[in-house]
View 1 (cartoon, helix red, strand yellow):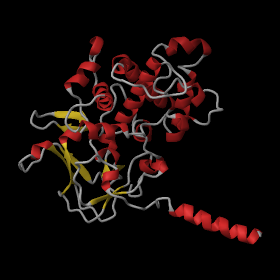
View 2 (spheres, one colour; view 1 turned 45 degrees about the vertical axis):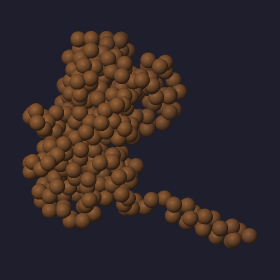
View 3 (cartoon, helix red, strand yellow; view 1 turned 135 degrees about the vertical axis):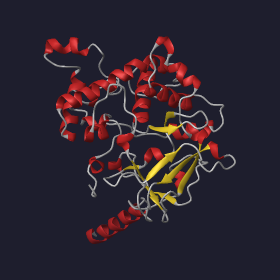
View 4 (cartoon, helix red, strand yellow; view 1 turned 90 degrees about the horizontal axis):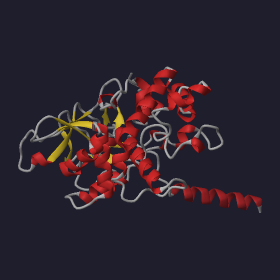
Length: 347
């Protein structure tokens, strides 16, 4: 009968829902970071779709100010190596921190043999979310100058000569980039020219590195369109976007100075509010214990309550050369941080 059918449907739906992780469910930290990271007081919940891969790292127990939260083997930290620097400088190009770190990411995914190589490759290859501008960000496929007109990637769409090419149509640049800039400005309430300039800056940086770094892609990602060489360049664009959304600066260790890097666990922390970040990276164990120099430490900057999210300040992350974006515009475009992260409850 209809009544029995409704009951059966209700039971089936409840069984299906029981198989899904609850929004607040926590799982072992090993699901979020490569093996070798020691963080006994942390737990992780799957990031929500609207978080775009950021957040969900929580204190499983109270953490005291200046307490070491996590120990991360330096071999698991993605940082430029000699091969990455050489690739970024190929053909007489002027390398940037972004091109060197993107080269390091591509090498990690497509080469092997070094210590921690397997764990590093698995971790870097697992990155999905990057900055703003993938297909879903640009609207549905039926929209003109939307996802269907993107050349593999929004980063890879257009050229450095677009101003001259499209001026006769009274457009400042490629129409896809122009439309994306208008949408980005509307989303972040930024000036239209500032949003467009930020997109063009990102595209210009990509085009400066695409040719030398494409050679590092051993097997390009399968896509519905594009030649192998085109798909290699689109893989470079994807890698750049994901590196930009995760990068930080880190004390170099024995050599001194700072390096640009992506650090496991730290790369997916939530954005902090007005109270400031409650964690800080220390690139060298200050205690000097045996083997300590091989670890990067994540340290609490204040007391952290059980269940509280661990945070970092993304406004302090490195920016692309020539990028002058700020506020919600930068938080969304570079890091993919959602509106909830732009204005925190304690601001």
